[in-house]
Amino acid sequence: MRSIHVWILAVVLGTALSAMQTPAPHALDARASDPVTMGWMVGSPPPPDKVIRFADGSWFRFPQSRWSYSHIRQLLPTSVVRRGSGPVSALARDERKDIDAVTFTPIGRSETLTWAQSLDANYTDGIVILHRGRVIYERYLGVLTPERQHLAFSVSKSFVATLAAMLIAEGTLDDARTVAHYVPELGPSGIGDATIRQLLDMTTGLTYAEDYVAVDSAAWQLSRAGGFLARPEGYTGPQSFFEYFKTLTKSGTHGDKFSYKTVNTDVLGALLRRVSGKSLSDLLSERIFSKLGAEHDAFFAVDPTGAEFAGAALNLTLRDLARFGEMMRLDGRFNGQQIVPKAVVDDTRRGSDVARFAKAGYPTLPGWSYRNMWWISHNEHGAYTARGIHGQGIYIDPKAEMVIARFASHPLAANVFLDPMSLPAYHAVARHLIAGR
View 1: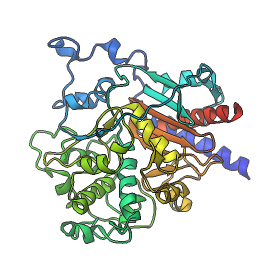
View 2: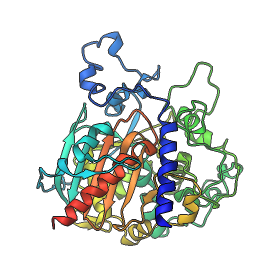
View 3: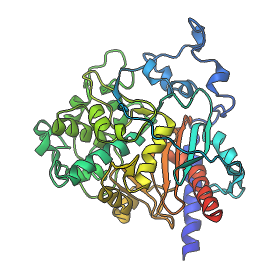
View 4: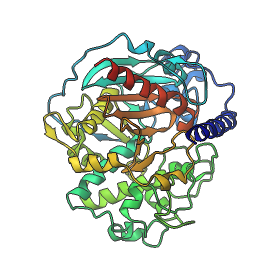
């Protein structure tokens, strides 16, 4: 019976990927689209055909995006998440030369590839592997450097939700309470009667589509309201994230099924600002980021009112991304202190209702679930991950004592395009590390 299920998955996945790849059949490969090779924004001033702007939307178009995801501060207003004044937590190094040759078979394909080949296939900008807290592999491509922050997209959600889960654990927030209990102005909206737990596990029944292709989708409307995407001439829609929240309506029952919606995280961000009386940037710095021994400040892109784009616009350096992942791997303890309560990490790792998650129909994630805005694999290694569009991610494999942090600028947004390459590659490295103990 299991073999039949695997065959059906392969057929469904192959059909889905074939259909979904068609929007960009002529995209440049990773080498041809390298932002250094293409010469974006070089010169004073750069040649007109090499200029990338926010106002004309070029920053968000491939291949320009391969430069702009590492230069958000030159394009958008931001709010700093300070690293604090403490010393940097040193990451010991024990770099290995055998990782590039690790082989794996992508989902839905028969030929094997190497880890090194997967980097170009996923348009990787930077990737680091920690094993037992030591850097065993680190690569930077394109314009990304160890000192430069990169847009994390929806990996941001895992930072914000972990922060919220900490406040729940200490009693400052009650996840059984509704959004309207904490932010009464949103009571009349479709999100008002959703509970904090339903936000955290993405089970709200909102009329909202997380569509990254249709320019009139709810995801694009949210981004325009927050000033993350340029507004078209004559735009009369919401002028901030909070104004957008007030327009939300319901098309289903909260709590019925998993349905991924970035707006849930941004409502959560507004709630955290309200409850704490602080900006989300300051709260994240105070409770998590300043305790990691980060090398550099992080920052959020913000809307015209200064509200952070909680669901998609945290920017940080690759090693600091890895430090956050390593802290989660170590039960919330890192840099000599308990940063996140172990109970929060345990709750996240356990995941949630697999059947409810399955209703969303993710072809590359059978048997997974979603908890506290982390994706839980329930595989034999207990792996879980923070994921963002265009290839951002933290992959934690507790059994292999491994953390992988990656930034990328894939021309296609949804992770269904990267999972067939990424997930088996990550698992292959984990198995390789276990075998070498």
